[in-house]
Length: 406
Image 1 (tube, one colour):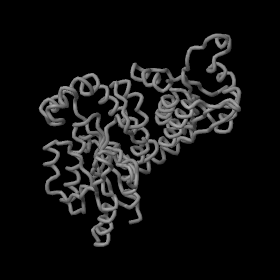
Image 2: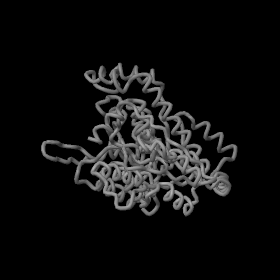
Image 3: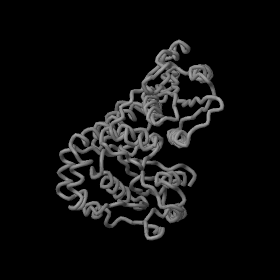
Image 4: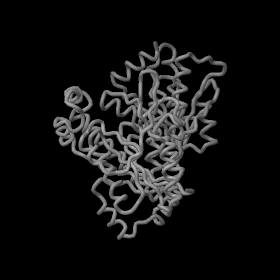
Protein backbone atom coordinates (compact mmCIF):
# COMPACT_ATOMS: atom_id res chain seq x y z
CA UNK A 1 0.00 0.00 0.00
CA UNK A 2 1.78 3.09 -1.18
CA UNK A 3 -0.96 5.75 -1.29
CA UNK A 4 -1.81 7.46 1.98
CA UNK A 5 -5.15 6.54 3.51
CA UNK A 6 -8.24 8.77 3.60
CA UNK A 7 -8.99 10.21 7.07
CA UNK A 8 -12.54 11.07 8.14
CA UNK A 9 -12.91 12.80 11.53
CA UNK A 10 -16.29 12.94 13.30
CA UNK A 11 -16.23 16.14 15.38
CA UNK A 12 -18.65 16.80 18.25
CA UNK A 13 -19.23 19.31 21.03
CA UNK A 14 -19.38 16.82 23.94
CA UNK A 15 -19.62 13.13 24.86
CA UNK A 16 -22.88 11.52 23.82
CA UNK A 17 -23.72 13.53 20.69
CA UNK A 18 -23.41 10.45 18.45
CA UNK A 19 -19.95 10.58 16.87
CA UNK A 20 -19.13 6.91 17.44
CA UNK A 21 -22.68 5.87 16.49
CA UNK A 22 -22.38 7.69 13.16
CA UNK A 23 -18.89 6.30 12.49
CA UNK A 24 -20.15 2.76 13.06
CA UNK A 25 -23.06 3.38 10.68
CA UNK A 26 -20.68 4.60 7.97
CA UNK A 27 -18.36 1.65 8.56
CA UNK A 28 -21.29 -0.76 8.21
CA UNK A 29 -22.47 0.90 5.00
CA UNK A 30 -18.97 0.59 3.54
CA UNK A 31 -18.82 -3.10 4.47
CA UNK A 32 -22.29 -3.74 3.07
CA UNK A 33 -21.03 -2.13 -0.13
CA UNK A 34 -18.29 -4.74 -0.44
CA UNK A 35 -15.33 -3.08 1.35
CA UNK A 36 -13.06 -4.82 3.82
CA UNK A 37 -13.84 -2.90 7.02
CA UNK A 38 -13.01 -3.50 10.67
CA UNK A 39 -13.62 -1.94 14.09
CA UNK A 40 -10.03 -1.46 15.22
CA UNK A 41 -10.88 0.33 18.49
CA UNK A 42 -14.32 1.06 19.95
CA UNK A 43 -14.99 2.85 23.24
CA UNK A 44 -18.64 2.22 24.21
CA UNK A 45 -18.34 3.72 27.74
CA UNK A 46 -21.04 1.28 28.74
CA UNK A 47 -23.59 2.66 26.27
CA UNK A 48 -25.82 -0.20 25.22
CA UNK A 49 -27.02 1.40 21.98
CA UNK A 50 -23.42 2.00 20.85
CA UNK A 51 -22.43 -1.59 21.59
CA UNK A 52 -25.52 -2.81 19.74
CA UNK A 53 -24.57 -0.71 16.73
CA UNK A 54 -21.26 -2.58 16.45
CA UNK A 55 -22.82 -6.05 16.54
CA UNK A 56 -21.99 -8.09 13.46
CA UNK A 57 -19.03 -5.92 12.47
CA UNK A 58 -15.54 -7.51 12.37
CA UNK A 59 -13.60 -6.32 15.42
CA UNK A 60 -9.87 -6.55 16.11
CA UNK A 61 -8.88 -7.90 19.53
CA UNK A 62 -7.43 -5.28 21.83
CA UNK A 63 -3.93 -5.37 23.21
CA UNK A 64 -3.81 -5.65 27.01
CA UNK A 65 -1.07 -3.65 28.74
CA UNK A 66 -0.38 -4.19 32.45
CA UNK A 67 1.57 -1.66 34.47
CA UNK A 68 1.65 -2.59 38.12
CA UNK A 69 -1.94 -2.98 39.28
CA UNK A 70 -3.28 -0.94 36.34
CA UNK A 71 -4.44 -2.86 33.25
CA UNK A 72 -5.34 -1.00 30.04
CA UNK A 73 -6.87 -2.31 26.83
CA UNK A 74 -5.34 -0.47 23.88
CA UNK A 75 -5.42 -0.46 20.09
CA UNK A 76 -3.39 -3.32 18.64
CA UNK A 77 -1.53 -1.28 16.03
CA UNK A 78 0.69 -4.15 14.79
CA UNK A 79 -2.42 -6.32 14.51
CA UNK A 80 -4.21 -3.61 12.49
CA UNK A 81 -1.29 -3.25 10.09
CA UNK A 82 -1.05 -7.03 9.69
CA UNK A 83 -4.81 -7.26 8.95
CA UNK A 84 -4.54 -4.50 6.33
CA UNK A 85 -1.61 -6.29 4.71
CA UNK A 86 -3.64 -9.49 4.41
CA UNK A 87 -6.53 -7.56 2.85
CA UNK A 88 -4.30 -6.06 0.19
CA UNK A 89 -2.49 -9.34 -0.49
CA UNK A 90 -5.85 -11.01 -1.05
CA UNK A 91 -6.89 -8.33 -3.54
CA UNK A 92 -9.53 -6.90 -1.22
CA UNK A 93 -8.89 -3.27 -2.16
CA UNK A 94 -8.18 -0.43 0.26
CA UNK A 95 -8.93 -1.46 3.87
CA UNK A 96 -11.11 0.70 6.16
CA UNK A 97 -10.80 0.88 9.96
CA UNK A 98 -12.67 2.73 12.68
CA UNK A 99 -10.51 4.05 15.54
CA UNK A 100 -12.41 5.80 18.33
CA UNK A 101 -11.26 8.72 20.53
CA UNK A 102 -8.31 10.43 18.86
CA UNK A 103 -7.22 12.29 22.01
CA UNK A 104 -6.69 9.12 24.08
CA UNK A 105 -3.30 8.73 25.80
CA UNK A 106 -1.84 5.25 25.30
CA UNK A 107 -0.34 3.13 28.04
CA UNK A 108 3.42 3.63 28.45
CA UNK A 109 5.65 1.40 26.38
CA UNK A 110 3.55 1.23 23.22
CA UNK A 111 4.60 2.43 19.77
CA UNK A 112 3.19 5.93 20.32
CA UNK A 113 2.18 8.12 23.24
CA UNK A 114 -1.14 9.18 21.66
CA UNK A 115 -3.83 7.42 19.67
CA UNK A 116 -3.83 10.12 16.99
CA UNK A 117 -0.23 9.04 16.30
CA UNK A 118 -1.45 5.45 15.85
CA UNK A 119 -3.97 6.81 13.34
CA UNK A 120 -1.20 8.62 11.48
CA UNK A 121 0.77 5.38 11.21
CA UNK A 122 -2.32 3.61 9.84
CA UNK A 123 -2.89 6.36 7.28
CA UNK A 124 0.74 6.22 6.12
CA UNK A 125 0.28 2.46 5.67
CA UNK A 126 -2.59 3.14 3.27
CA UNK A 127 -5.51 2.38 5.60
CA UNK A 128 -8.61 4.57 5.39
CA UNK A 129 -9.58 5.62 8.93
CA UNK A 130 -12.78 6.83 10.59
CA UNK A 131 -12.00 8.54 13.91
CA UNK A 132 -13.80 10.63 16.53
CA UNK A 133 -12.93 13.64 18.70
CA UNK A 134 -14.68 16.37 20.68
CA UNK A 135 -13.91 20.02 19.97
CA UNK A 136 -12.59 20.64 23.49
CA UNK A 137 -9.65 18.33 22.75
CA UNK A 138 -8.23 20.55 19.98
CA UNK A 139 -4.92 21.99 21.18
CA UNK A 140 -5.53 25.57 20.00
CA UNK A 141 -8.87 25.71 21.86
CA UNK A 142 -7.46 24.59 25.21
CA UNK A 143 -7.56 28.03 26.85
CA UNK A 144 -10.93 28.94 25.36
CA UNK A 145 -12.56 25.70 26.55
CA UNK A 146 -11.13 26.14 30.06
CA UNK A 147 -12.66 29.61 30.16
CA UNK A 148 -16.05 28.41 28.88
CA UNK A 149 -16.39 25.29 31.03
CA UNK A 150 -14.11 25.78 34.03
CA UNK A 151 -12.39 22.49 33.10
CA UNK A 152 -8.83 22.29 31.78
CA UNK A 153 -8.65 19.46 29.23
CA UNK A 154 -5.38 17.56 29.58
CA UNK A 155 -5.66 15.23 26.59
CA UNK A 156 -5.32 17.25 23.38
CA UNK A 157 -4.95 16.66 19.66
CA UNK A 158 -2.82 18.93 17.43
CA UNK A 159 -5.06 20.97 15.15
CA UNK A 160 -3.08 19.77 12.16
CA UNK A 161 -4.74 16.36 12.54
CA UNK A 162 -8.06 18.02 11.74
CA UNK A 163 -6.49 20.25 9.10
CA UNK A 164 -4.92 17.28 7.29
CA UNK A 165 -8.04 15.11 7.40
CA UNK A 166 -9.72 14.65 4.03
CA UNK A 167 -13.20 14.85 5.55
CA UNK A 168 -14.52 16.41 8.78
CA UNK A 169 -18.11 15.59 9.71
CA UNK A 170 -19.67 17.75 12.44
CA UNK A 171 -22.08 15.73 14.58
CA UNK A 172 -24.48 18.40 15.81
CA UNK A 173 -27.06 17.95 18.56
CA UNK A 174 -29.07 20.66 20.39
CA UNK A 175 -27.94 20.95 24.03
CA UNK A 176 -31.47 20.30 25.34
CA UNK A 177 -31.60 16.99 23.47
CA UNK A 178 -28.15 16.02 24.77
CA UNK A 179 -29.19 16.81 28.35
CA UNK A 180 -32.27 14.63 27.97
CA UNK A 181 -30.10 11.77 26.69
CA UNK A 182 -27.93 12.21 29.78
CA UNK A 183 -30.95 12.12 32.13
CA UNK A 184 -32.25 9.02 30.35
CA UNK A 185 -29.00 7.19 31.12
CA UNK A 186 -27.85 7.01 27.50
CA UNK A 187 -24.45 8.67 28.13
CA UNK A 188 -23.27 7.82 31.67
CA UNK A 189 -24.34 5.24 34.27
CA UNK A 190 -26.90 6.49 36.85
CA UNK A 191 -24.34 7.18 39.58
CA UNK A 192 -22.44 9.65 37.34
CA UNK A 193 -25.44 11.63 36.08
CA UNK A 194 -25.88 14.11 39.01
CA UNK A 195 -22.21 15.13 38.95
CA UNK A 196 -22.29 15.55 35.16
CA UNK A 197 -25.39 17.76 35.33
CA UNK A 198 -23.75 19.96 37.95
CA UNK A 199 -20.46 20.32 36.10
CA UNK A 200 -19.72 19.83 32.40
CA UNK A 201 -23.30 19.14 31.26
CA UNK A 202 -24.81 22.52 32.05
CA UNK A 203 -26.94 24.14 29.38
CA UNK A 204 -24.82 27.31 29.12
CA UNK A 205 -21.59 25.33 28.80
CA UNK A 206 -23.00 22.95 26.21
CA UNK A 207 -24.34 25.89 24.23
CA UNK A 208 -20.92 27.54 24.25
CA UNK A 209 -19.23 24.29 23.19
CA UNK A 210 -21.75 23.80 20.40
CA UNK A 211 -21.08 27.29 19.10
CA UNK A 212 -17.33 26.59 19.31
CA UNK A 213 -17.70 23.36 17.33
CA UNK A 214 -19.77 25.03 14.61
CA UNK A 215 -17.36 27.97 14.46
CA UNK A 216 -14.45 25.54 14.14
CA UNK A 217 -16.25 23.87 11.25
CA UNK A 218 -16.92 27.24 9.61
CA UNK A 219 -13.24 28.16 9.89
CA UNK A 220 -12.25 24.83 8.36
CA UNK A 221 -14.69 25.44 5.50
CA UNK A 222 -13.12 28.84 4.84
CA UNK A 223 -9.58 27.50 5.04
CA UNK A 224 -10.29 24.55 2.77
CA UNK A 225 -12.13 26.58 0.17
CA UNK A 226 -9.07 28.77 -0.05
CA UNK A 227 -6.40 26.12 0.43
CA UNK A 228 -7.70 22.72 -0.63
CA UNK A 229 -10.55 20.66 -1.95
CA UNK A 230 -11.14 18.72 1.27
CA UNK A 231 -14.71 19.18 2.57
CA UNK A 232 -16.11 19.87 6.02
CA UNK A 233 -19.69 18.67 6.39
CA UNK A 234 -22.52 18.95 8.84
CA UNK A 235 -24.19 15.66 9.67
CA UNK A 236 -27.16 16.44 7.41
CA UNK A 237 -25.65 18.45 4.55
CA UNK A 238 -24.94 15.74 1.97
CA UNK A 239 -27.68 17.26 -0.18
CA UNK A 240 -26.03 20.70 0.06
CA UNK A 241 -22.74 19.19 -1.07
CA UNK A 242 -24.47 17.62 -4.06
CA UNK A 243 -25.86 21.04 -5.00
CA UNK A 244 -22.35 22.49 -4.91
CA UNK A 245 -21.09 19.71 -7.17
CA UNK A 246 -23.90 20.31 -9.66
CA UNK A 247 -23.02 24.00 -9.61
CA UNK A 248 -19.49 23.12 -10.71
CA UNK A 249 -17.64 23.98 -7.48
CA UNK A 250 -14.64 21.67 -7.69
CA UNK A 251 -11.03 21.20 -6.75
CA UNK A 252 -9.63 23.03 -9.78
CA UNK A 253 -11.55 26.22 -9.07
CA UNK A 254 -10.65 26.09 -5.38
CA UNK A 255 -6.94 25.67 -6.11
CA UNK A 256 -7.10 28.61 -8.53
CA UNK A 257 -8.74 30.69 -5.79
CA UNK A 258 -6.01 29.65 -3.36
CA UNK A 259 -3.31 30.83 -5.76
CA UNK A 260 -5.05 34.19 -6.28
CA UNK A 261 -5.50 34.79 -2.55
CA UNK A 262 -1.93 33.81 -1.70
CA UNK A 263 -0.59 36.20 -4.33
CA UNK A 264 -2.80 39.10 -3.26
CA UNK A 265 -2.57 38.82 0.54
CA UNK A 266 0.72 37.19 1.58
CA UNK A 267 0.15 37.82 5.28
CA UNK A 268 2.69 36.56 7.80
CA UNK A 269 2.28 36.64 11.57
CA UNK A 270 4.88 36.88 14.31
CA UNK A 271 3.89 36.12 17.90
CA UNK A 272 6.08 37.20 20.81
CA UNK A 273 6.00 34.52 23.50
CA UNK A 274 7.44 34.87 26.98
CA UNK A 275 8.52 32.27 29.50
CA UNK A 276 5.71 33.56 31.70
CA UNK A 277 2.40 31.82 32.45
CA UNK A 278 0.65 33.35 29.43
CA UNK A 279 3.09 32.20 26.73
CA UNK A 280 1.03 29.23 25.54
CA UNK A 281 -2.23 31.21 25.64
CA UNK A 282 -0.83 33.93 23.36
CA UNK A 283 0.58 31.32 20.97
CA UNK A 284 -2.78 29.54 20.69
CA UNK A 285 -4.64 32.79 19.98
CA UNK A 286 -2.11 33.82 17.34
CA UNK A 287 -2.28 30.40 15.69
CA UNK A 288 -6.06 30.58 15.39
CA UNK A 289 -5.79 34.08 13.89
CA UNK A 290 -3.23 32.80 11.38
CA UNK A 291 -5.74 30.14 10.33
CA UNK A 292 -8.43 32.76 9.75
CA UNK A 293 -6.03 34.89 7.72
CA UNK A 294 -4.60 31.86 5.86
CA UNK A 295 -1.17 33.13 6.92
CA UNK A 296 2.06 31.56 8.11
CA UNK A 297 3.01 32.03 11.75
CA UNK A 298 6.40 32.41 13.43
CA UNK A 299 6.97 32.47 17.19
CA UNK A 300 9.73 34.52 18.83
CA UNK A 301 11.07 34.29 22.36
CA UNK A 302 13.54 37.01 23.38
CA UNK A 303 15.82 36.60 26.38
CA UNK A 304 18.46 38.88 27.80
CA UNK A 305 22.07 37.86 27.07
CA UNK A 306 23.42 35.78 29.92
CA UNK A 307 20.02 35.55 31.63
CA UNK A 308 19.68 32.40 33.73
CA UNK A 309 16.08 31.20 33.58
CA UNK A 310 14.40 30.00 36.76
CA UNK A 311 13.12 26.40 36.91
CA UNK A 312 9.60 27.76 36.44
CA UNK A 313 10.63 29.72 33.34
CA UNK A 314 12.42 26.66 31.93
CA UNK A 315 9.32 24.53 32.45
CA UNK A 316 7.01 27.08 30.83
CA UNK A 317 9.35 27.64 27.86
CA UNK A 318 9.53 23.88 27.32
CA UNK A 319 5.73 23.89 27.29
CA UNK A 320 5.76 26.61 24.63
CA UNK A 321 8.23 24.57 22.54
CA UNK A 322 6.03 21.48 22.71
CA UNK A 323 2.95 23.48 21.82
CA UNK A 324 4.72 25.16 18.89
CA UNK A 325 5.80 21.75 17.60
CA UNK A 326 2.23 20.43 17.92
CA UNK A 327 0.84 23.40 16.00
CA UNK A 328 3.55 23.26 13.34
CA UNK A 329 4.99 26.66 14.29
CA UNK A 330 8.72 27.45 14.22
CA UNK A 331 9.91 28.83 17.56
CA UNK A 332 12.83 31.27 17.26
CA UNK A 333 14.92 32.13 20.32
CA UNK A 334 16.89 35.38 20.14
CA UNK A 335 19.15 37.06 22.69
CA UNK A 336 18.77 40.83 23.00
CA UNK A 337 18.44 43.47 25.69
CA UNK A 338 15.50 45.03 23.84
CA UNK A 339 12.55 42.96 22.65
CA UNK A 340 11.71 45.50 19.95
CA UNK A 341 15.22 45.19 18.45
CA UNK A 342 14.92 41.41 18.10
CA UNK A 343 11.36 41.72 16.78
CA UNK A 344 12.50 44.24 14.16
CA UNK A 345 15.28 41.91 12.94
CA UNK A 346 13.03 38.88 12.70
CA UNK A 347 10.16 40.80 11.10
CA UNK A 348 12.47 42.15 8.41
CA UNK A 349 13.81 38.71 7.50
CA UNK A 350 10.44 36.94 7.70
CA UNK A 351 8.28 39.50 5.93
CA UNK A 352 6.01 39.94 8.96
CA UNK A 353 2.73 41.84 8.50
CA UNK A 354 1.16 41.22 11.96
CA UNK A 355 2.74 41.06 15.41
CA UNK A 356 0.90 39.47 18.35
CA UNK A 357 1.91 39.88 21.98
CA UNK A 358 0.34 39.42 25.39
CA UNK A 359 -0.94 42.30 27.48
CA UNK A 360 1.62 41.62 30.20
CA UNK A 361 1.37 42.60 33.88
CA UNK A 362 0.83 46.24 34.88
CA UNK A 363 4.06 48.24 34.99
CA UNK A 364 5.33 49.12 38.46
CA UNK A 365 7.95 51.48 39.82
CA UNK A 366 10.30 53.11 37.32
CA UNK A 367 8.96 50.91 34.52
CA UNK A 368 5.83 53.09 34.43
CA UNK A 369 7.98 55.90 33.04
CA UNK A 370 9.08 53.81 30.06
CA UNK A 371 7.14 53.72 26.80
CA UNK A 372 5.02 50.52 26.67
CA UNK A 373 6.30 47.71 24.46
CA UNK A 374 3.35 47.86 22.01
CA UNK A 375 4.08 51.52 21.27
CA UNK A 376 7.79 50.77 20.81
CA UNK A 377 6.89 48.05 18.34
CA UNK A 378 4.56 50.39 16.42
CA UNK A 379 7.38 52.90 16.04
CA UNK A 380 9.99 50.31 15.05
CA UNK A 381 7.76 48.35 12.67
CA UNK A 382 6.01 50.81 10.34
CA UNK A 383 3.46 49.08 8.14
CA UNK A 384 3.13 46.15 10.54
CA UNK A 385 -0.09 45.72 12.53
CA UNK A 386 0.44 45.17 16.26
CA UNK A 387 -2.25 43.27 18.19
CA UNK A 388 -2.39 42.87 21.96
CA UNK A 389 -3.90 39.57 23.09
CA UNK A 390 -6.09 40.23 26.13
CA UNK A 391 -5.70 38.07 29.23
CA UNK A 392 -9.14 36.50 29.66
CA UNK A 393 -7.98 34.05 32.29
CA UNK A 394 -10.66 33.04 34.75
CA UNK A 395 -10.27 31.86 38.34
CA UNK A 396 -9.17 28.43 37.17
CA UNK A 397 -6.33 29.88 35.12
CA UNK A 398 -5.20 32.18 37.94
CA UNK A 399 -5.08 29.26 40.37
CA UNK A 400 -2.95 27.30 37.88
CA UNK A 401 -0.57 30.23 37.50
CA UNK A 402 -0.28 30.57 41.26
CA UNK A 403 0.66 26.90 41.57
CA UNK A 404 3.24 27.23 38.80
CA UNK A 405 4.78 30.33 40.38
CA UNK A 406 5.06 28.57 43.76
